[in-house]
Length: 95
Image 1 (cartoon, rainbow, N blue to C red):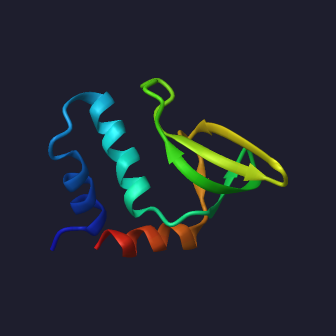
Image 2: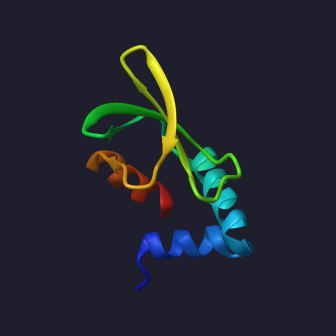
Image 3: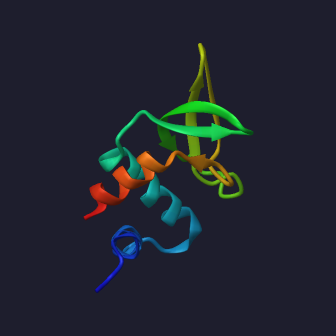
């Protein structure tokens, strides 16, 4: 039995060649299937993740569009944590 996350990754990357195309593919899946907003943390502060984006900078990778109180900011998702209920919802959406 294939892990649902592995199957989703295979589906996303099937026609994506190179890191840039892979990042664009993941960004598209977040746009198509993501359930926003969801809770996360940036440097230990609770935030709402409003969207996931990619601006073509492979070094930064995927970007989270996050809101904390009235401020909205974009930052790399590298080493960000996502609240467990959001992770479970993503797994359910992938099958």
